[in-house]
Every structure is written in C-alpha cells, then in structure tokens.
Length: 403
Image (cartoon, rainbow, N blue to C red; front, side, top):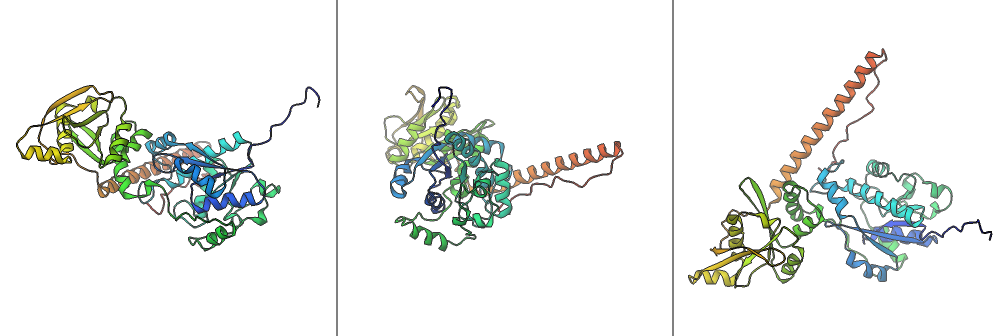
C-alpha cells in the first residue's frame, strides 16, 4: 500500500434497529441478520419507557448486540414544548416520540457507518402512529426517508435506496399488516425464539395511572427535567396549593420506595419525616425553600402513614416532624398531629384529562389562526403583485383520532 493511501475503516454495523424489547423489534433484527447483515440494536430509554437493566438478558436470550441510549432529557424537552402531532388518548406523544428516536437513530447510524435504520413497526397495528399516513409523516419529519426500513411491512411500502441497490434483499422482507400476531408468532417459531415477549406498548405515558402523576409536573414545575419524572414514578404523589404556589411531595409506600426516594434527593430538596420515630421517606421537591407551615403539614401527612407515630399521638404523646436537606442539615422541626386532612391531594386522572384536552384545543385553534393569517398574507401579496390567488398548500395538521 502506498504511503499516501488511506485505509477505510470497516463499518461497525450494516443496519441499526430500534429495539424496544418487544417481539416486533426482535423479529425486525432477525430478518436483517438472516440476510447476513451486521445489526446493532439501539435501546432508547427515558423515565417513560425502556429498561436498560434488561440489556444483558435480551442479549443472552435473543443473541443480539444491543446498545442502551438515554434520551430522557430530549424527551422531556419534547413534552415541555408539547408535541407537534398532539397527545394520544392519554399523555402519549406517539408520533413525536418516534420522530425523536429516529433522529437519534440516524446520528448513531452514521457514527457506526451503517446504511439502514430499521424498526419493528407494522402497518395498521397501532391507530395513532402506524397508519399509512402517520408512517409517511414520521419518516419525513425525522429526515430518514432515504434510510428507514420497516422489514415486517416493507412489501406494503415504497422501497428505499438500500433495497433498490440490493444491499437489502427486498424479496426476503415481509408484508404483514393489521393488529393480529399470527404472522409474528409463526416467524418467532421459525427463528426458534423460546421466550416470546408479551404484547403491550411498554410506555408509561399511555397509562392513566402514570399520566395523572406526570401532568402536574409538566404543568406546574417551571422547567421539568428527567429527574423530576423519575421522582413522579416513585411512591405516592401529593400536591398542595398555598401561598400562590404549588408544592410537590413524593412519599414512600415500602422499603423499596424509601430507598429509591432517598436516592432521588437533589440539591434544593428536603427530606420530610419524623424525629425519633420510624416512618416513610418523603421527598419535598425544592423543599428547602418551602414555608414552615407547608413543611409542617407535609410532616403531618407523612406521620399519618406511620403506625408508631399515629399510635403515639393517640396515647397523647407529642410527635415531632422535621425537614432536612439532602446532606442531613435540619431546616425545620416542630410538633405535629398526624393527619391526612391538611390540604395535600393526590392527582386524579379525570381533571388532568380535561386540562390536557382543553390545552390541545386551544393550541389547535392557535395553529389554525396562524395558518389563516399566513394564507391571507400570501393572498394579499399576490394581489399587490397582480398575480392570481393560489390554492392553499398548507393544510392544518389535524390532531390524532385518538385524542
């Protein structure tokens, strides 16, 4: 080899596959491996989905190379800005989520030298994000039209350059569609998959129980980040409105919760509990700046879930509550009466749903008004230039049928 010749590094993978741990993503990876392609699976995770702790199990069980990638902060930014394609039935921004993950996947595809991004999506399987029109919008907005392959439904979709050039053999891809799983189960048997993942979305944002926890964080925290939503996943959640502010308390239900909550404390928080008596761990987010009366009522609520504290109060003994910073410095202490009638309330789904719907209605209304204003501006410009008016080429992005 001549001295001025450069060696070209061999790509680390031919294709990257968005890997959720579900059957469809496993099968998509196996279909490409069957063609002799080197596959790297990307498992994206956040407070709302993913399980990086399962990577080892998946690799051993399905004989796949899997890389875990944290997208929590980017996903929180998506929620703060609100999804362009609206929420689904609960708090799930399915289309915007897929767009976000595909944009990340493209960067990792280029890093690895791969030529294809593959997903386990099946045409018509999910009503919000896997309709034909939604699939087209997702690949367009994610900027992956030239590289995105959906192996399970490829024969229902236009070929991408990698198929046209023979890098991927289109004839060995599939034409599955609809909500049934018969074809997937037959394929799993062909690949001798001995452990079949149970079907399910795997996203906490699709579940009302979780959405009621997340919505107050999204609505009331000034700049919620991934750590806030991790906290919202833990224990019991309580909110209090007082002094023109909203206060947030997370309380453990068992030893496991208490350990997780203690680990979730961060600068500016307070650990609220009892002085001299055992009880739940309660994290007051930003509690170091709470007024004394709010800390006292938070301690009274915490004491109401502590058996020894309620028994001591019934015997006429004085129970003391306290609040400490994460490093153990006491910032408040005082006598309390264990009580659940202090104004603290657990968030409910029904009110949250109405607020989400109303917010989306107003947002859609504002988008329509902006669209009409742009249309009128174009019409006026055409009239001023003596040109004929053109048809409106900017239809409103309608909300999902699941909203």
